Image 1: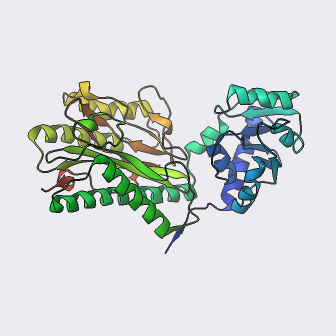
Image 2: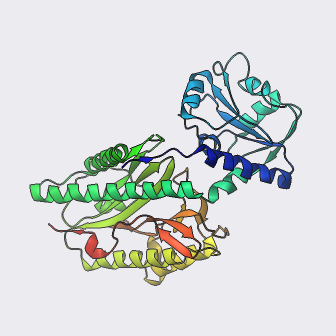
Image 3: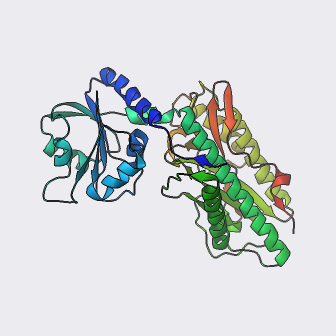
Length: 390
């Protein structure tokens, strides 16, 4: 049985109505978005972002999608949920692309724009719509914080993808141990990416292709002490600690699944670091619930590592929100006072990084539920589950 990655038109109409309910509260008549993720969130139109602008105008009774002519048929084929699709010929063009939008919408009123709209883009809009009053608004970002049931199912599928990639990585290394030639980080990364893509297309239809459909970080030994180290030609060695930080997007919604593994029986030092990190991840994950404050959850999580005596090896927060972006609000960090709510999806991924030795990180994609939380990623995280026998 295959799973469709496309959300229904009703989902997008619901987004339109939820936006409109905020118009009166913010005293605006419309909102304009141009970030490709916001365009996808509001209309269902996913595209390759480039210099040619694509934008959505949401008014009180109409939704208009502006695209370059080379994307017009693509938007129609995807079934973009809008009232009108209007297209400009080319960019930069003899006229501003937004002149096309001006012929399709009222050229007056108070319009909101998202924080992601650049000052340069806002100036372009202002030159075409001189009688419009512009107001910065986070209403789209705030809607995206709370995932609807259909989006949550996409995140579940994405979490499965991450787990599939972890299993593929372990299977490759286990087979390599038997053959006597261990893979390099780059070879391992290539293998898990291909395994994830294969699973995606075998088990899903209407696959939504976005940047980093499947991917992640693969690093071993001392390289794993760099939290965002990139795969290299380093070949895994017996005794290595190594991290597989993997994931991707289903229907444009992301998830990540990360585990720390040992190539052979770990030393006392390796066990100490791993145990502290696993305990911190468990404490931090258990603290995720409606009403909890992000900064408090983060502090409770990272204090476990500090109390174990490894505070000097902290390099980052507990985690971050996940949605149409791999990293997005809310932030599980001391500086974020966001109150967690049902429907938020976050990562729980404390890490310990020891220069010259190795890094230790365990991450799950976690859904905040009415009565607490649910781990969407399910790959085992106990120490006996991450030792690969030589």
